[in-house]
View 1 (cartoon, rainbow, N blue to C red):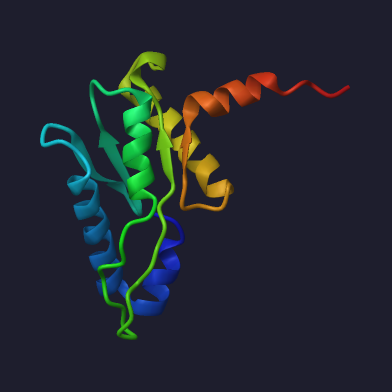
View 2: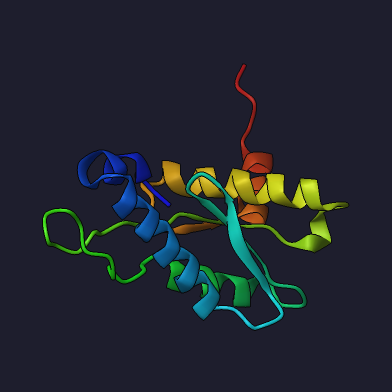
Length: 135
């Protein structure tokens, strides 16, 4: 989730908790029953979607980057927030820690791009390979 701290600061931790619960519910609504979706820590969530292509993962991420505001804030108005998603494929990772690290790098790239979007680790890796060293 992007900019979660201001939600807690403005609306209080009870509203922040409801926002996190709302995002968790939104994650569950966009995956299959056998997929794994859960809070990873703080304002980060992980969704493991085995056996799908990166195209399908991108479709899921696109839906999650604009969740509806279903939580009412302390001011009586909907609490709006955005989500940055990082996508990594298992094919390029030898183990779960590496997979999570790749997804994390992609997520931070999405946050650097302004948030409310997704990034694919493989695209970031390819872009880094194309950068020419300066002399």
